[in-house]
Image (cartoon, rainbow, N blue to C red; front, side, top):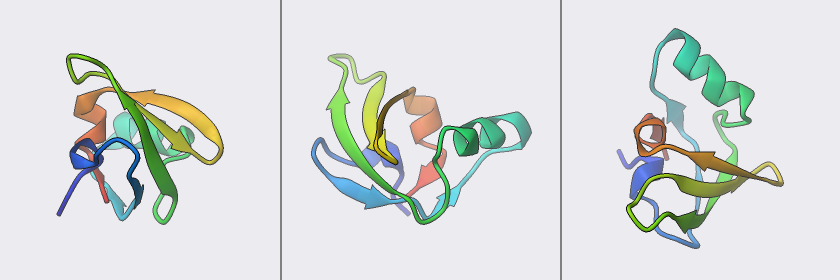
Length: 72
């Protein structure tokens, strides 16, 4: 299954599942990344970290490590 890290700039994907345990999963959910939500990749930093996405109408920057925990 693909992860949010694999999504290309300009692509809109739907969150299928959050992988992670405890506080990490809770933090992602608190940022609005829940099952079924659409996420658009806006920018990727020159060295690939962080990734800027649009979720629920606001901009969010995610580390690559966190983006790998989100199946799309």
